[in-house]
Length: 252
Length: 120
Image (cartoon, rainbow over all chains, first blue to last red; front, side, top):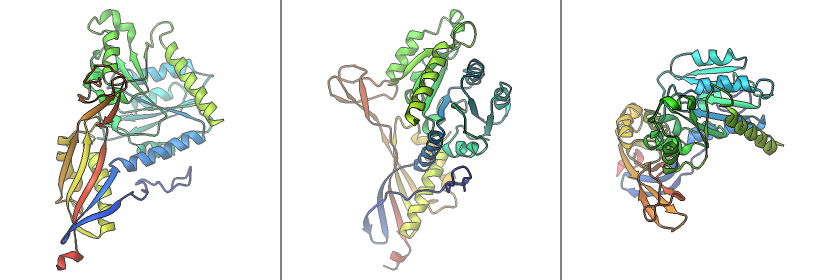
């Protein structure tokens, strides 16, 4: 039993009944049944449950996805420092094997729960649900979920976050969206990170990256950020503030 | 490779259906896998026997229906089949399109053998 909400989601989540249509065709002792069910239906139900948890606490949940090394944890560190005293933030960290990222986040003075996935290449809604049991949501403004560094698998699993943010660092190449269309298409916001390195990386064209995103059907906003130098994070922080404000307005 | 996790979710659904239907064993499972679902049909087929081992679906054939991406253009209304990383209208090349097929990851059909019916 989930002690936060009294739901029946334990380590193996309870499933709602399937919408099966027993219009079965019978062939002697062999029968068949037509069903139209999302294979990841059970995950989607836990995700919806997580989302209602976030809504009940007025917390904006943001899922960060990217390849390894594109700057998710660095972005979070810089974001937490910039928003200190303004927004209350917590982080769920997904990683295959280490607690390193959660330790970095805790060093910034905010709560962090590490999910070590073992061999799993992605977070799923159940892992997030279990992490929520270690993380009081009361009083929080934003919960970041840092997914496992991987541009393929995390795209298929709804975690219950309100917004998906995908990072694309300029060291990765401007054709990444064309190579990983499912991931980039799914996002609400794409951050082109490490733009302070652009003068040194002539192969990367921000314009080509934008075109590649358009070709995979990405319809969200594209922001260029850098944790180094001046106001490299300003656009991202403004976007975050406005999303927190609309979440509050929706909850009120 | 998240296809193993997808197969495990699939097997849980199949086991439930088998229980509800009184199936002795499952003969075949048909799934639809869209090109934009993020799941690879070939990897799904490789992962299936691992997820199904020791279950009612252990001997079942996994039938994967691959669904290509189809977009409908908001400008010229044409419906065309396109590559997953090129969601542009195949007729007029406009990028204002809606995906009408290719995102699905669905269990469609389960064929099974019932214990009672074996008396026939």
